[in-house]
Length: 291
Image 1 (cartoon, one colour):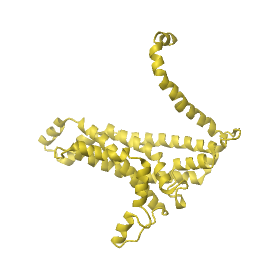
Image 2 (cartoon, helix red, strand yellow):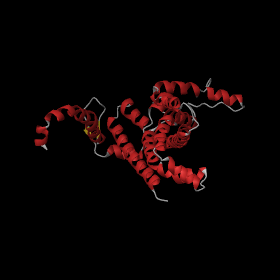
Image 3 (cartoon, helix red, strand yellow):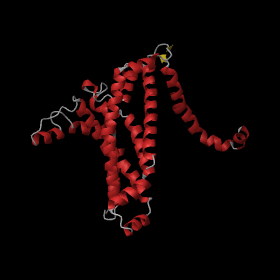
Image 4 (cartoon, rainbow, N blue to C red):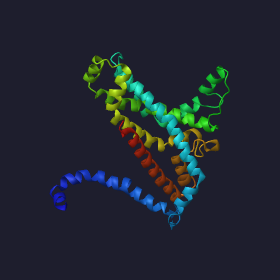
């Protein structure tokens, strides 16, 4: 290997910045966080090695389990509607009767590149307890106004709405790319054989779109488990009244960067990593299982 490096040292010199950057900002933080999870450190004083004490406290911590439950609820409330809406948008964009599809693709993708702070401000106004747009329509139709920021269910719905609005267009573009890979001859043959639209969708489109669906589900799961910016900007570091918006990453941020418990924060990060791996495997098994 060293002989090859010496022979092609010019090429390796040009690609070395990537590997150096990856080592400094990728590998080192991961390794250091594992060591940090076995220590007690406030970021200033000396590190004290405590072994598995952080993980023992993590397992017994009710707030950690509450943050997991909150994250799972928000993930379910956002991911399922988002994937359904993304599929609908992708089918419409792939239809022959839709004109100016390029313009619609750009418009649907814009929420994904919009600054999340601006999105949080807008949705904060929409779900404002006193003068919010949602409460205005609720009272207009005779319903009671909801204190979205201080209601445990309301906070989850508001955060889920932000996630759906931000990621539906992005996933629709991915689904659209998968739909355009499916040969039109298959649809023509199915129609000649007398298949209706539902049969074509279930027997041709969904099976051939399964790899794309798997990708979207796994990436949505990873992103859903890492939900942080939306609740942090909407209800603050505490997660709102009763901790209804306290997600796993927000709880990690609270412990590590607000309370300066870096060892315990690293233990939460490792716990989050294990949860993401487990959910990704479950999603993969569900989507890949044979009929």
